[in-house]
Length: 124
Image (tube, rainbow, N blue to C red; front, side, top):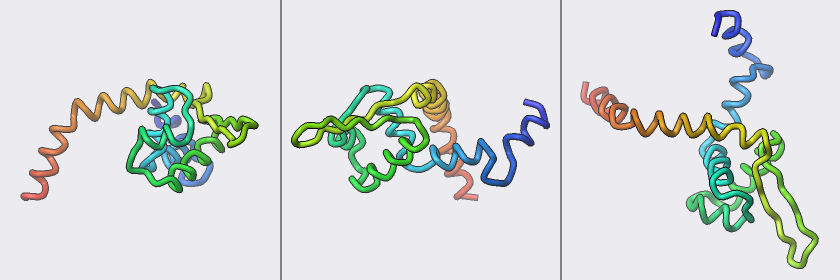
């Protein structure tokens, strides 16, 4: 990446693509929702909630709405009684999976060293 490219990606305003996307995906739950939908496929709300576990229903709802607004997931409502709602990744959402997998692999590879560095830092 050249300095000119970096300038384009690091603008300090709301038009900065990198900051905008990281704001959305850098929260506590968005990446996890995308990964679960990528691994498990289309899921209903309660099943998705059970895979994530410690997220509140309200926070899961907020996260799903944000991801839907960005076109990363779809929400399909079936006209049944009671209504059935399913969530799935869009093509755009699925295109994030290899990058998230690479980040997860990097984290797993380096986490032990990161913990050791943190411990050393606290002791100094």
